[in-house]
Image (cartoon, rainbow, N blue to C red; front, side):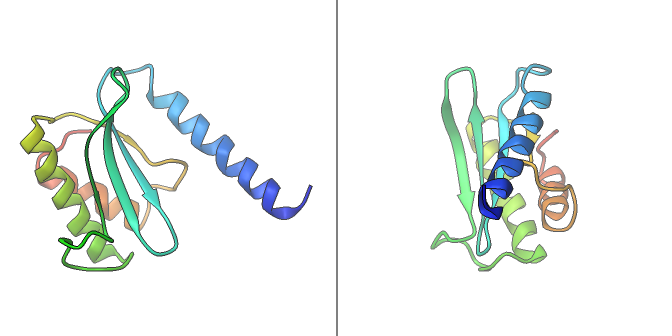
Length: 119
């Protein structure tokens, strides 16, 4: 087994653990944040129906600040909170997909909370 396979297994195990911890506790939609090397993407998923309620990403044409820095994470948090309020979603559970609650993830979450999402 090479290093890449080992790393992928660790990431998968971490993602599964975080999802397992948040899923059975509260029957709320899940706010999933996905961080890549270039972009940030979020979506609100209703696990009961298996549908995505709304989504946003930093690579959208309508998104003003490009990139993956803290400012773009804050803008993304505000954008997803406004789209969620249009759909009538107020309370969600944050699924950070194994990422630490630090830096861009924390900036995103604080901006979403300020705009009205509860988690």
